[in-house]
Image (cartoon, rainbow, N blue to C red; front, side, top):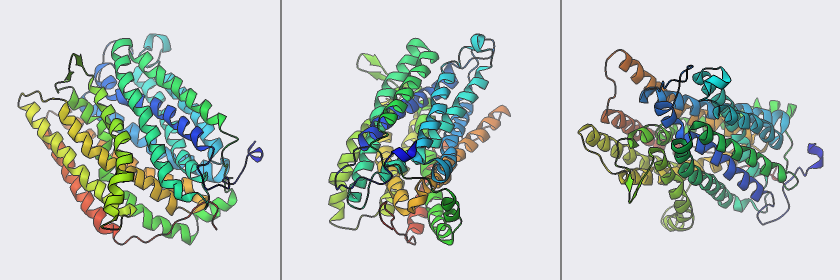
Length: 456
């Protein structure tokens, strides 16, 4: 019962006591999500069965379409979770409840390749499992991020940038372990074990979060006041300022989230030898979280203070810089694809360079946008604004990629070609460059203010 919990942040200038539980929960939850996501493209193109248990994989374009529609759904459902949280349940209850759907979704995924046992088509099971995971993972997403910020009052709000950095580090620690382990489990033990282990970690994440219930600040839901505040001129003005910022990040998310799809599929054609070992194509994804672990402290405590001595570092300038840094990543992928199509087998180490650009950009764009969205949202609308960001930025970015892949798949079925080979990557390189220029121009006109819990 929520009335047994504290409803205001701890009065301290230090790190709030509930943060370790949130960070521990996030590490386990991200292990489950990224572990499942890391093998999804390979599963769809190499392991998917039909109702009779016979191999019936998707084409690369179809798999990319499926996966980006799923990733879009993960970032559409945050708006639903945000409304539940800010209007009716509060962040803690919303996270706890929707995480149960998350656990069940993973259990369904563990049964996808058992049509003889379930009596259901693997594609139907896949749709059910991914749908439940999208509801859980997406529904809790704005609540978890805003729940972090809710633990801080005016006395320790200066620690917000640091805690969001550590929060992001916990995400990537979970991702590193899962992206190294789960692709190996897929090849050695099959989809049931590879999808089942992330489900177990999600159950553990839920337990860790429950353990911290008495340490958290449980900001009460807004109830009728939330509805009234949503439909005020002030909220309208805030959204009119923020939504264009989010929409202009669509190209970044369209490119970045292809690290789970087109980059994995390209990795199948690379030389994956690493000494006496041969890497799995899906394991190259762990380069990203490994680089995050190195780059977050380097940028926060080294590069940013150094740049700050010469010019003012603002959130929007950091985001714009990250978007420009993204451009070379897909240009390199285009050149790699040209070499592959010409009969060469480039080394997987070229993807290290690609990830270097993508990861540097991710730190500047993703972490900064999370912090920026939280501070720009009125106190009763923290989760809602997070939900708006997820749907108008990340979800639409994935929908754009899915739509492009659907057009390519349709063209292939007609026997024609569309964005074949290197042209696919050059197309997205151009989209990213145009998006970065547009963001740089528009961000010059943004004017907003910050809101912190504990301040009127």
